[in-house]
Length: 296
Image (cartoon, rainbow, N blue to C red; front, side):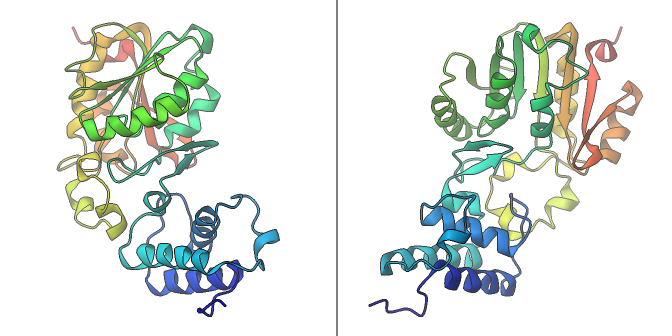
């Protein structure tokens, strides 16, 4: 006999939503609200299809299943651990990735642009041969780009060997060994010297004032992957400065800077930034052509 008052996913869902709401959780890692987060955690923990809640709402659960779900709910509510770390899974678009506390929970507006092949800036996706991703983390963008540009080799760079260990898990899962190459490097330092058609980065860009106000969920993540210095542009400056000698004559640099457009314009506005449209509007991702980066 089940010793708890929870018998079904419906019971647990009601409890989880109340628990998450009372705890005033922050939802910035995939889910938009307490209900969505609760549904995801319950279905994932019970190994049920993520797109089918209704058929299982009133299914009777085993005591062990109830215990497992309650433990996940408590970790989320009390320890403020992001859902992706609790399930070791995060999604970007239609792509699932393994994640743990060694990497940021994947979230990137650049991911919205990859299925469109960065059109119209990339004229022929099949002609893209070399791609460099700086600050790759879990390798998610590198893997998506290898999929989008089938004739390309993608060099996926991170300073964190812990992050690269996670990236290697995802590279193996997508069977992209040899096409996505993890490289331990402080930005360009250890990158093979060759010309790239694309350099893409979602680097640490949170400015110091914003870092001090981050919700607890973000404090669980590796801070090295978030902090971008006083104006958030410390690493972005180095990325922009080094891109010119690494791009082909027709190459492009694409950088995500989140909510830091004003700081990016102050630092690089003289280069003539092109702001790409994403679900965040025209605020989060900028593009520079190779010729804009040439300084004589």
